[in-house]
Length: 214
Ligand code: ADP
Ligand code: MG
Image (cartoon, rainbow, N blue to C red):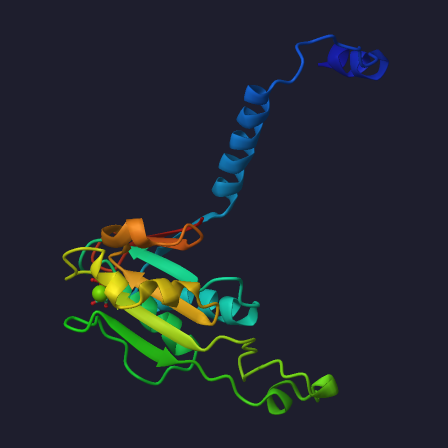
């Protein structure tokens, strides 16, 4: 150990004449970096009650609406068996966004829309927007989100059916927050950039929630 320390101070970096970087090596390095980034953006939670699951969802919801909308809708793909807690998660998410209606699994209706309140910019921030520039900031700091869309693909026979419901326009609109239950059934239609919420049923009231950003 002491020897290692001693050598560390005296050894000069040597010039190496190793093999030149080729494309394969560069792609390999990029792939490794991507895997590491994916690992960083994966979070795992363990909850012991529906309330705890809803609190995690509420924290995510508040964070999302405070952020600026991107080029496309913000999409959450919820996966997990029946009774895992997907609807429970969405209830916590919607409550945090002050949606008054009770969120249930839309058993016969495939899709439900909920308006997001965007409030008065002056009232909300206490600061008059300069030059009349209308940045919509609601009581929660909304910056342009308009709709929360809840989709339940449980009864869907084919993911193509979502196309006739205008799913492409829904995904293309940056004012939308879309939460999809049984997302694994409609994977081919999902946008590449999405957040996957996978819920595992561990025990009666215990759930494992894995959140991965793609
Ligand atoms: P899904 O939509 O995935 O079919 P639901 O959310 O409708 O599931 O149902 C989940 C059920 O499990 C609810 O009755 C809920 O109260 C219960 N539950 C018990 N513990 C938890 C937990 N830790 N997280 C979420 N739901 C839980
Ligand atoms: Mg459900």
